[in-house]
Image: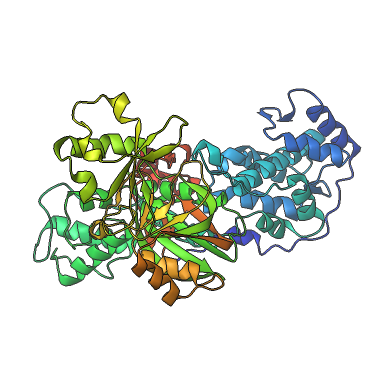
Length: 558
């Protein structure tokens, strides 16, 4: 797909002049009367939605701010265009009075003389639209804590009244709005890619669904394969199609790319899972992009000179320094019953050759059944058993094989604690990475490296297993004074547990993006493994003039 640059765009060609108040006392009186009542009517049919609207006018002496010589100013026309094109940022113009604004603007344009009431209503409605729009653009449609329980970062508070004043009197609207637009590079990339999908939906209505049937693979020939070719052409994985409907090597390669871009098993075979993904309506893809643009609004403007970001649905970890990826690897994350928490923190400690203190829930669910059938399991896997003494301190139990694990009650079992020694059998592997968090989770190695051969890796109890733990330990610890690879390896070889506090903790972000753009410019989509996307809160909007062409797919997403 060719990248689409839309005409908001047209608004940017209008130069911003020095703003002048509309010098009409009648306008001031009308605006004051509308906003001084409890109803705060922006127009006859519309109540103002933003509390900032009345604050702004009060601060500006109830002057009209979007009018010049009794007509909408260049800034007003520009702002109407920005509102009409809000969908380019995944925002619905209908939430910002776009219908009412355009009706009022058309009335003004079609009359030689306009009443002060009409002009005042236009001015107030556009101001209200501005505040609603910039609030969603900066802070998001949803609040982070409505989606992620432990996400404590919020966008930096902004004086939106000041933003409008700067936009009108000083910097120009585009600069003012850009100042509160998310600065995260991934936001801009996803926005551009979403605009491409929007243009496909506007121009074609989306791709045709491929009927269910047998698995499609190399060598097949059918009408369904021809539809598959068309589908892959529209999303860019296939460069050209032929009308013979052959599943060629080029089609197979395109299917593999599609599977990789959508978190599917990349064998080049169109099975039930791949077909279901291919048949997802384009508006649902756009909706997913909108939800993730919103999540990107919740990131801080500055992630730090150095940080580690884990994207849970992607099963991936990236270490970034000076805006360059230094290290990337696969991870395994919590399953749906024990989801990994979405949060931000700082890695402050690395533990080489860690002990594993089993959580009570894991001990009861997984260890106890083994002890009932194998009394020597504790010795084989190097577990110590601990029990509280009279003072409440946990001490090691001698000869735990003599304990009758089989016939005790759950309450009796829960009196014990279990700790696994460092070594090859330790479930945490050779290293763990600690960071303060309310979920009591951490990053760690594993003694089951085969888990990284699985493409769906959401099955842990909440902690995050890293695919290349030694590389991560080298990356972090070699930045500490007195540490190098040789010293780290000597501790690994020795086997003794060693805790290393970091002199400068590293920012850590456990994120939840189910759509983003890869470094090679492919739109990426992943399953919503924890059902956190809240996509029903995001309404796909396509321009009214083209809406009839994409109406069917649009209604699916809403």
